[in-house]
Length: 416
Image (tube, rainbow, N blue to C red; front, side, top):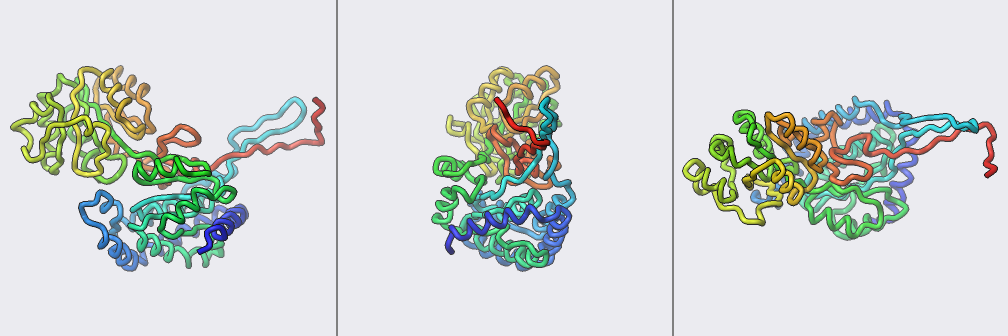
């Protein structure tokens, strides 16, 4: 595969998308949703080939795995995206100048988006759908762990694109090798922005080596602070959901911060985690409070390395703090600016936490499991940005657009 030719074809396809009506894209996405469900046996069989090459102990195994239920969910996401209004052409602002010029600030596509991701086949269709809906062409660089799954998804998409007379280059799956990654990082003039999705190592590599702009979707080192006024029943449910709903995703809980005045409640607070066989790494006060109340094989003393770790498994750290201020300081030191939460009945503490924490999504009395494009009403997401330029948090349709100024005149010239 001549990658430069591929990149140039994708650039041309992105220009052609400007002439495609939004209704035509919506119809295509609905057809793709139907095709996804119809091809479930084929997609599961190809996914099984990838799964057979990955040990079940690998944290990515759950992310890689497709099921009939997950494929139905992917199809529903496609339909949801089709049902959302297109952001393209939205007038963000407009004004008239004293010289008679009329200015409009209008949403437009980014152009060509490169997505680099690891063992996450759902990213293939999320990216394709969100890009098409926003008039962007995409270059998909999946990892070798999901090579069969990604190729199968594009094989399902290809005839749908053809039936709707779309240039197949609007969505191209690149080879799952490092040479393709290197070429994509250097595709100046062909790629407008890169979005890496995966481990911190992958994100760091892309940021440090790319010659085209990058939107970082950072790893999630997620905390929940249970303060001195937190509701015990509510807290137990929130913590269990945030930790155990799906341990391999970036919004899952990594560290519980608990106010020292509530240590006596810690066994009850974490009882659901014991049932789920979550291994805890607790600091000395928390460890003492849990001794005799939590399964001994699942309880260990925390070391400094456990704080700031994204576990992506049934493991979690527990840290005792003396105040809201200490909790905020811990999050500032060890967090990744992804998702953070507080469980409290103190209105002042809630507002202080919401305002002081520097993260893409900050929660008061709710599970961090909601940090997700579909849950935020965005249809799906192309990633969760932890940076502050251009986009932050779950990135949906609006985040895949830029804008341009339209200037309408009646013959004005500048004289100074």
